[in-house]
Amino acid sequence: MAETQREIERKFEFTHGDGTEGGGAGPGRGGRLPDLTGTAGITEVRAEGTVRLDAVYYDTPDRRLAAAGLTLRRRTGGHDAGWHLKLPVAPGVRDEIRVPLADAPPRALTALVRSRVRDSGLEPQVRLGSERVVSHLLDARGDVLAELSTDTVRAERGTAVATWTEVEVELGDGVDPALLDAVEKRFRKAGLRVSDAPSKLARALAETGAAPAPAEAAADGPPEGTAGAHLLAYLREQRDALIALDPAVRLDLPDSVHQMRVASRRLRSALATHRRIIDRTSTDPLREELRHLAAELGADRDREVLLERLRTRLAELPRTLVHGPVRSRLRTWNAARRSATRRRAVAALDSPRHLALLDALDTLLADPPLRAAASRPAGRVLPKAVLRDWDRLAHRVGAALDLEPGEERDLALHEARKAAKRARYAAEAAAPALGKPARRLARAAKNVQTLLGEHRDGVVTREALHRLALQAADAGESSFTWGVLYGREEEVTARCERELPAVWAEADDPVLRAALT
Image (cartoon, rainbow, N blue to C red; front, side, top):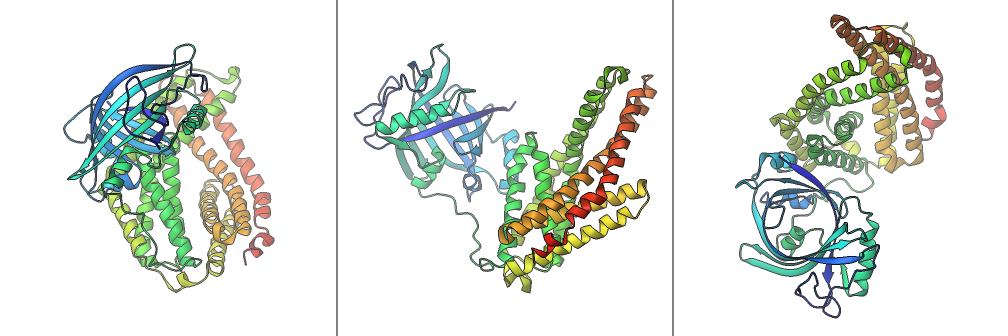
């Protein structure tokens, strides 16, 4: 069973001397770590003894995990012996996922790095042996504020060997990170400094001559400032987001499915918007694969959104309008759907089709099929692409408004919503090159998208409420409340349709578009 723990720590190096001493002390200026008693609420530094740790770090032969700041190790010794995968969250903050000891890297962890490892094998890269002198930093109640460790480390990679001593201060659960700042200030006065290396593995690789290769460069690509350079940078950013979000989706972290879906949609939109920069005969198959990925992820995301909307609407009803076991019916309905949608999302990430998509994106970015417009200045090419998407949006909004209310108009408004999203993405992607005019147009598109999104959510919610009412009736329960909620969603969609002409008139201001040209 995997266990996840948030790790917030800071590493320090001695600037004078080396080695360790007993009782949780080690050399700084004057031969010992400074006494931290009285620092940021620390009332006692309690020695916990010495432990010997042995860890073997696994990675691909080209060290892809290390390049991304991830570490996968098999460690013995200490209270947490087992397999550990560390995922970066922010500087000095990592999530450590632990599973029990086994001979080979366990599936529970290898699945979380699949988007980076892909078909390459995981092999032992470095072995680290550490003698760790541990102390606990306690507050007045005797609670642990942090763990202070002085590690004497020996790294071995083949015949290469490196040794060093470092100090770690790891916060206890729920402790204010300001404690680390106070400790750092005290350590600096004693002759210690914050370590340049983000992890022991990073330092071991650097000092044994195996630092991972730098991130892919665009040295052979279009010159800085051109439309091609701008587009490729944006595509790399979204590709990287797809890869980085993979473990978060598998771990079912909040908003992760939504963010991965957005990245796939931004990639797909950019390839469509900029078909005059990059050849669509190569990108159209990728767009179809990105559409498929978004659809597979969408089932779980749509369920999340719908559940939250139904819960909110139900909470807004007075008690007199709540008849029957509606909340338990909603829980049962969601539980049945959630199991299926979660499996569908994870299955999509596990499929060979997904790895083929990531490989295809890498190939496209390594050798992009650029067209002549790619070499032109971004300020001349991007506005035309953004305005083409805006014209597409205008056409779809106009077509929807010409229809009578009903199912056909609902579908047309849904198509207009998708066009608003694409226009927004195009303007947002162009903003680094085009500045304020693009940002203003993006906000205008977002306003239209938000209104049309509310309309679409109302349509989808009505459909769900109809099914829930039928299920309740079949079970002999009252369907009254579901009918009340259905009526309220009808009011929401009708309001959105009434407001659309005014919202669109404000968004489609010729001044906004003229500012781009």
